[in-house]
Length: 218
Ligand code: GRF
Image 1 (cartoon, protein in one colour):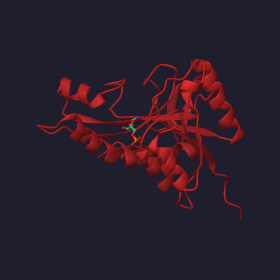
Image 2 (tube, helix red, strand yellow):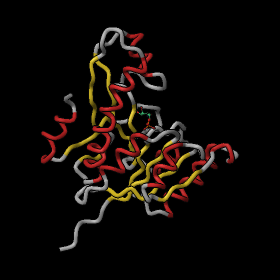
Image 3 (cartoon, protein in one colour):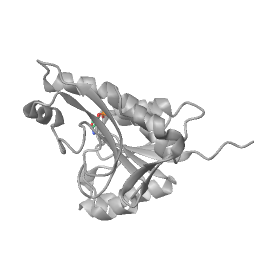
Image 4 (spheres, rainbow, N blue to C red):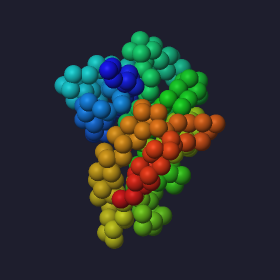
């Protein structure tokens, strides 16, 4: 019997790539529904690129500063994604905003992880935002990407407590542990077709109703 075709994933990074590494590790499992076929970065110096190459994955450095406009960068990236036969784009610490056209071209096929419990604390410095707001729970969110920043339909979330005396670094470290657990689980659901974006809402297939709930717990 032939095994089902795996979803071909490109991971886009701008930095150290610890989430990328957790996804690469998860995708080594024979029954994982996605294969990581490309890692691309808008920053040639991103540490994650070397780690991906060492893991035997094709890498591309597309320096955004070498492109005349946002649209030109997005077009160059699109060429790479199409050439690699990518089904799903996974943003993992990719610190660059796309043109609306690029986002629309990947509607329902591009996901991101954000270090807060969206819709709280969009944008950057999310841990400082959480500390300033005095929330007692903080966390991370995997969501589909839409043109509006950090506003896409939510696939999965994990929460952590905020302890008295926490600073932004302590919170970031506690959340990163959850990110590395949540993102591979969420990607498996999307790549396996158990989670879909339908008319702007996330739907779960019946067999993962319990699994999706588990993603929400600590
Ligand atoms: C993570 O906190 C992620 O949530 C955010 O950027 C950070 C990337 O970290 N989008 P890493 O490069 O995956 O280590």
